[in-house]
Image (cartoon, rainbow, N blue to C red; front, side, top):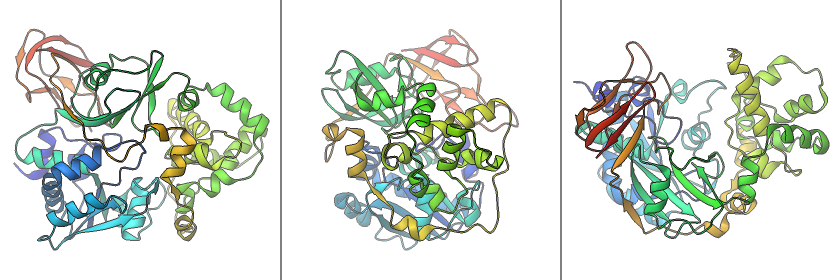
Length: 440
């Protein structure tokens, strides 16, 4: 069995993003593989833990990717402020001549793959394109460890995430895929507030999850517990109708949302201020101005830092993308001969410290998290779609006895998808087209 088929069999997907199936990604031949260890979002400690405690596994996974893609060079992207981790990684790669380290400033969004590719390689990815078009491939450090484990015959059954905020013991948690979010929080000593809200992911790009019985997936990076009345919770739960009304009343036409947009600064034809003008005043703008909302990565820099009126171009772009997608409309985004603005990008890097202040989360920040929690749940609810692509097909039946690591969801024939495996041993108590429940 070749490397890519092995990775496919073990159900590896991107652990740092939307869960793109890794076996498909590694089907590309590239020149440079970039290991993303920048930990882009505030309050998260997954990458730091992974590199500090399992750096050898990460490097082994990087070597696998170099072999699979034919790349001549591997680069590990780290924040230069993480001195201990930098020294740790340096000690591991001493005898690997084709692997080096790239040090980045502590800015947001350093971990966005388009920004990262430019900062590390100097190559600019055209709008609507992927890093492979400029000979690069980006992979999160946990994904690389999962790739290495795949070569050892170990499927993805666990997810490393940070549980922080209003919890008694902020921790890095080794969570079983499918265990309830509420159980993870309980493993960290429980909550410190009665009226709480949970952000899944990071504070910038994460979402509010109201159901604490929702299961952990392969792509979850964090659980941030906040008071229900926290600024960030109010921001993320604001109705779209309010966003539009506020924009019409308060937008001052300053263009800062565009001037600080990371994608605009890479030369992409994304102009949030023009989209806001159309929403506010119904101005007749070219259709491509609105369509190019699809170029928005929804990093949130416009709403958190750029806009002096506290408006949300990100939410407007999201609403446009959702509306057009529901209408089965996908614009052609690729253009040639665009003008790059990367010199401006270098001088407009927003420090993470400023982001934390704007989000009112500095109270929860810490230099390190020493607590690491292993989990052993008695029940898991494993979703059959935790990735980009089609929902996996269940291959077990109610009443079956399964062992941890056994296949329970297969990729539909000829489809883009990822395999799903049991995260605990036990009896299958429910199977449908969306999930498999196992009780230990």
